[in-house]
Amino acid sequence: MSLVLRGPADVLAVNPVIPVVVIDDARHAVPLARALLRGGIRIIEITLRTSVALSAIERVASEVPEMVIGAGTVITPEQAVAVQRAGARFIVTPGTTPRLLDFVLDSGVPLLAGASTVTEMMQLAEKGLNAMKFFPAEVCGGRAYLSAVAGPFPELRFCPTGGISAANAADYLALANVGCVGGSWLTPKATILAEDWDKIEHFARQAALLNR
Ligand SMILES: O=C(O)C(=O)C[C@H](O)[C@H](O)COP(=O)(O)O
Image 1 (cartoon, rainbow, N blue to C red):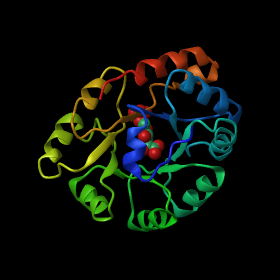
Image 2: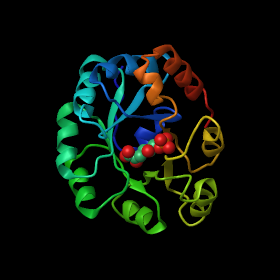
Image 3: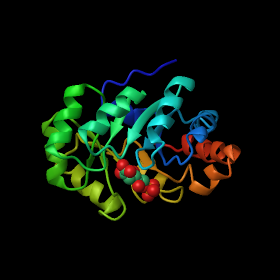
Image 4: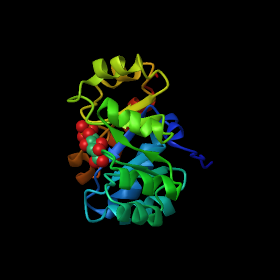
């Protein structure tokens, strides 16, 4: 079954956790995605931090169609075009410039845009984006910050990312304005390099069971 994503709120709704993944070897992408799926996680954000990221996105999009594949670390319109061609079904940005925001919104692909200040959050809401990424969450004030912005902006929903781990994910997910969290702890670099897919499946299973 393929999930339809109409916007960032649908991206937040897929699972309690969006795994943020750095792939160094494109051959790892498919077994990694399958391990996440076996653990119950059906969404993945592959970051454009390595030269093989586009190829990794392409492989997952074509070989693991059940996986909702997104591209992260998208910071230019050119990258936004390239990741959609590769098969990304949503785009994640660490922050948002007006140029990038308008370009991605015009392209119609669901955008999980990054914000870390109240002004940035208001700018995204002005564009109709009521669900967004809060990055880098822990160093920008964490749960206390999100609780504070819930006062004036009760309609906004967040995917806090940056510094989230198995130790604090549940505390974030307990907040009413947190839809899901993002993080790299499900897919540690050493575990990917060791091709220990069972371990990644185990991390995914624990993450998929988190309450929200
Ligand atoms: O690359 C991007 O687009 C980002 O926005 C950064 C990532 O979301 C964080 O680096 C994940 O944070 P950790 O879970 O603390 O490793």
